[in-house]
Amino acid sequence: MIQKLTNLLLISLLLVLFSSCNSNRCEGIDCQNDGICDFGECVCETGFYGDFCETAWIDKFLGFYEGTQDCSSADFVSNFKKRSVTGANFTNFANAGYDLSLNLTSATRLKFEDQLLGMDEYSGTGELKNDTLFIQYTAIKNIGTTTEYIEDCAITYIQF
Image 1 (cartoon, rainbow, N blue to C red):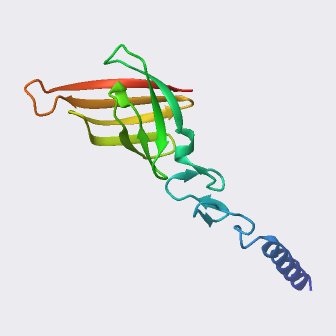
Image 2: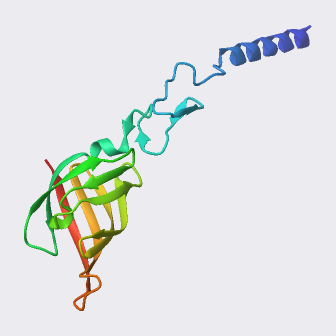
Image 3: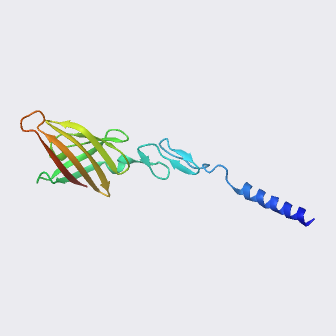
């Protein structure tokens, strides 16, 4: 009799435990921007982040920046403009008067490769920390001329 009572109590306890678990952890969770709920958490598409994939990576990059670089003494202004979810144009890049096309690789990092601006070719990476964008790049200057040379530079952009 005690064995039956113990078994009944154990079965009752297990039923209560299993019935109280929510088998659908994604119920009531609304993942945005094509994010998918997986075990109660949103898995975001490339280009988005946040608890519900509500924020685009590019949003925090957009705006005007004042730049200083170690290859030139002149300060300059550039504008970061959205081209796509993970793509942007950066006006007046490196004070050269041209727009640079770049891609975001995460919510804080960017990359550009083999961008021909005038007679110069640029490749580099960057990282956004708070309102400061740090860019490291290599420029092949005066391509196709007898005065061609390579320049490694860094730019610090402050968003305003």
